[in-house]
Length: 281
Image (cartoon, rainbow, N blue to C red; front, side, top):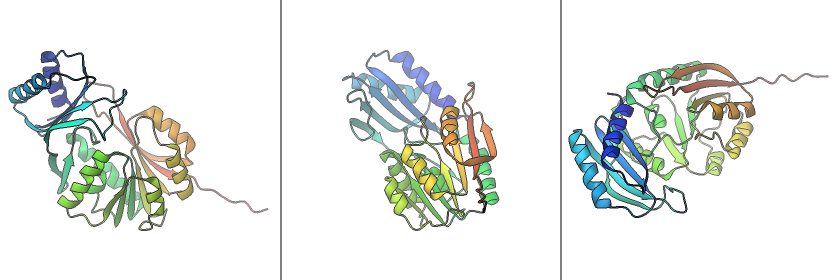
């Protein structure tokens, strides 16, 4: 029941049958035996052979193929906005905390759904500790955090970089009839949003890419001076680099071995802004 192991099983089975030099990478997401696959390739490939092999492997492993696409590079880059050819185009779906969660193979989600109880217990402990009433999410999480925690806040804004994660969140808002969750794709829109005003009553969730926060995002946090931040670190080097630029202390942390049979550790940090005591002459 560990989704990453199921995904690796599919990957190994597929790689043993396909030995094509033009395939650069295969993205696999498996949730409750629902499978999403993206074949990233360099040049034109034998798509009929790949399709046949994928369908045969899915049948052998008794999985349900929900999403299947080919993605070709352009000048060495795999852009999420172009060069997609979709064979099947459905969301992977499951329910958690009475919320319908929708995923695509290359949209972000915390690894292994069997660990979600640990994540969200820590998140809710932090919410209770901070007593924050609003939430801002910075980072591509597919809107899953905002959707799952929608009952815990008055207002939620998700600032997302990737159009695929926006697509997931737009559909989750509709499917779950969420009236307190919104999203933006430009940081200026987040700055101009007045629905969340108080830095002391707003909890920031940061889930950056492997390189950490962008400079403009650091500037935004420095100006707003939110009292509490939850930083989700899949890469300790990125967290260390970001933390050195932030005027915050670590209040609590949670370490999770998210990938079985590896040394991969995901760390969630609760940060509190350092108090600035003004001395009068």
